[in-house]
Image (tube, rainbow, N blue to C red; front, top):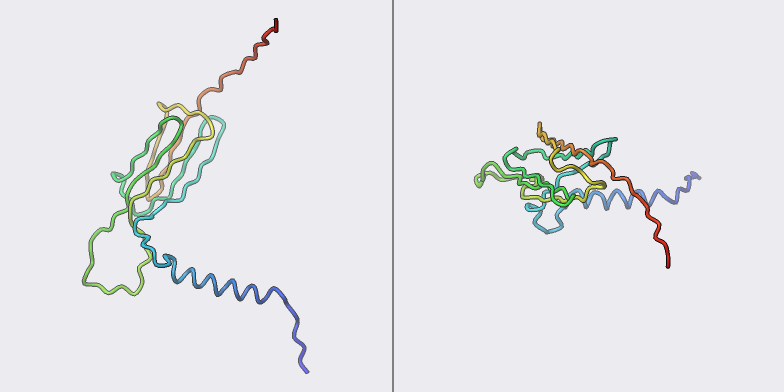
Length: 144
C-alpha cells in the first residue's frame, strides 16, 4: 500500500493554474481592447519635487500631450499601428493600440512654471517642483 501525503491546498493551486491559463489565452473576453491602451505610471515624492514616470513604449514623442491644471496632471497620447497588414494571417496578436488619457491629482501643490518632462526610449519622466508650504497661522477669536 502506497501512502500519499495529504495536501489540501494542492487542489486550489491546480484550480488557480487552470483559471490563470484561461485569462492568459483570452485576455479580451470578447471585448475589443484595441482602444484601451493604458500606460503604467509611478508617482513618487522627494524633498522638493514630485516625480512621475510612465512606461509608454511604441508611442512617438509628438503623440504625447502633458497638461497641468488645478494641480491635476494629465498625460494623453496615442499608440498607432504603423501599417495595415491585410495580407498576413496572424497566429497571435497581443499588442494593444489606441489612445489613452491618464489624470492624477497631485498630493501637494506644485509650481506649474517649474515642470520638466523628458521622453527617452519609451519612458516618460516628469519632474514637478513643489511650492513652498505656507505657514499656517492661527488666530484666536475672542468671544463677546
